[in-house]
Picture 1: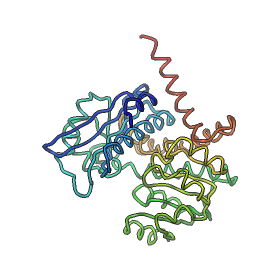
Picture 2 (picture 1 turned 180 degrees about the vertical axis):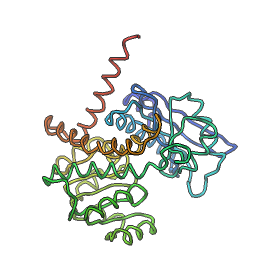
Picture 3 (picture 1 turned 30 degrees about the vertical axis):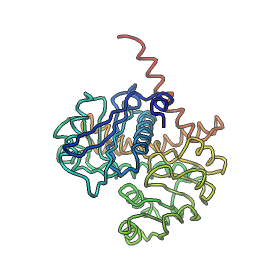
Picture 4 (picture 1 turned 90 degrees about the vertical axis):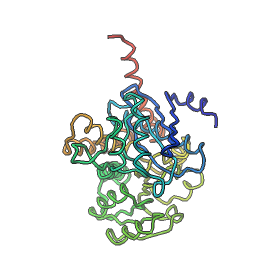
Length: 354
């Protein structure tokens, strides 16, 4: 992988390697674009198999955050941090405080929050070294766990897709196959269950799978079988790159709408879904509930305002569908166009010195 070439191709601003032998920290921070405002994105902890895998993941995630913020109408840019390590074994207070010092050195260009493998407690340790962190406990006047509103946003985006395909946005009687039953998948399942949807679920964690069955009456399948489930909606809610040339031909659904980031392995996979007649809800459009929630926190947290703004994901998804139909392009490309247009408008304004 030629890192500089990749960064130039997709207009990245900065890639920061953070190493601290004293705490064992090995982390990478990527800042994609700050045209609209400071780069916001979570700090993920994952046992990457190689440095290249970690670099590619943080770059892809940062770019997705730029588009997510832009499409949601937020005055924020896109960034991300990844910590190379096993969250079950390698966490320490010192490690997160060290990351906090590196974030502080960026002088507000990057704001972090929790992500896969990190928690509110971890954010508190980062907060000891920098103010550029969100997703802190409610008792601190912050928004707390962002996954409830992320799940709510995915639910709203899914309903917009169901309306487009079936003529009404009710999920009653619809079958939804959820891949990944973590925090976001669980919150999504609750909304679906309450509306009368049938749930098929899989998770690599046996405890999470059992919870899906016990709480929501989900039918359980193994990890690979989820792609072959006959359903109305396939909902990826785990890790990314699950929609690709190998899995898309196997799908037996009419809609793909889930909470995972970077669901498409490559840009052309959005076209592959369109060619199969499957309506795709671009991940950064419908999983924007977390970043919307945090944007409200940055100006003084109001939970009712946050929920109202997240509910607008329904209408954002509808606009993406309308543009895709008008231009004859995939919803993935339509979403990218909406996001890029907003960024370009801001760049034109900022050329004027005031």
